[in-house]
Image 1 (cartoon, protein in one colour):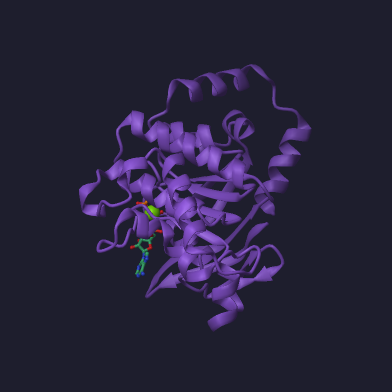
Image 2 (cartoon, rainbow, N blue to C red):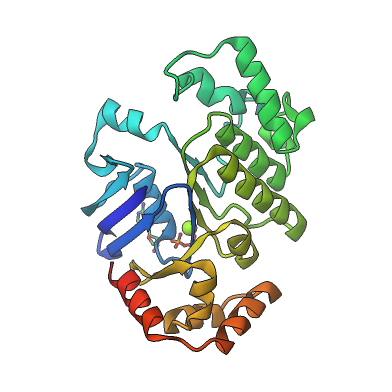
Amino acid sequence: MIQAKNVWKSYGNNQILKGLSLDVPLHSTVVILGRSGAGKSVLLRQIMGLDVPDEGSIWIGDTCISTLQGKAKQRSLLDVGMLFQSSALFDSMTIGDNVAFHLKQNGELHEDRRVSTSEIKDRVAKALNQVGLDDYQDKLPSELSGGQKRRAALARLIIYHPKVLLFDEPTTGLDPITANNINTLIASTVRSLGATAIVVTHDLNSALEVGDYFALHHEGKIAYVDEKRAFLQKGDSLVRSYLEHAIVPPEFQEIIQEGIEEPIGQSDIKHVKEVVLR
Ligand SMILES: Nc1ncnc2c1ncn2[C@@H]1O[C@H](COP(=O)(O)OP(=O)(O)OP(=O)(O)O)[C@@H](O)[C@H]1O
Ligand SMILES: [Mg+2]
């Protein structure tokens, strides 16, 4: 549903994406793991249409968005929502106005109609309730904590029911309990919207909670991708090396251990090769 096909991107002499390919199946969530500076945010920027690949293409469903321009591009990307690490709320608007923004601006995308003031009011209240911020409508972003801002940004996304959701480090800088709440919200939001999602994270607890597939971004490419348990259990050397340098939660250890007891068969090796070469 979301596809990056042989994407190359450089800034000056710095070649960041080097023929990267990734395929996110409809209604699934792929977690992208990888070292800092690997180019994960650069990849999301290409998918969000904020930047254009030097070579290769980005597809959302049947639309190649990387070759579109102007209004056609804007229209195709209306259904793509991103939660930025910084939350990116409008500082001078109240939380209620921030959450209402997309509906006021673009109406109901899926039915191609404007939305009445009373419907906007109801939907803002519902979205804020879903993220546990009932009493924050009239507050300014500066009056919220980091975790509350992240939740407000999530409400701003879920109110218009985007079909593609991109999350860049949604839990970075949050305490473990707040991070857990955000993860649960992300997982339930993606499910209830029937969305297709990419989550970039360094937080392996998050990865387990929200992901169906894990992908390792390494040296400008997706070096390895698989269903999450298989990703941890098949003992790929790059994955192993990444995990050696990461903070690995106990649930991860258990899944990895279970895998070690299972011998790797020829069919598994063939499958891994196919996935890597795709
Ligand atoms: N607009 C830009 N101009 C020049 N260089 C850039 C630009 N955007 C990103 N880069 C460079 O691309 C590289 C990858 O950056 P990116 O932000 O994608 O890393 P990342 O994998 O998201 O890292 P982190 O996990 O720390 O967020 C970095 O070396 C960065 O300096
Ligand atoms: Mg980043």
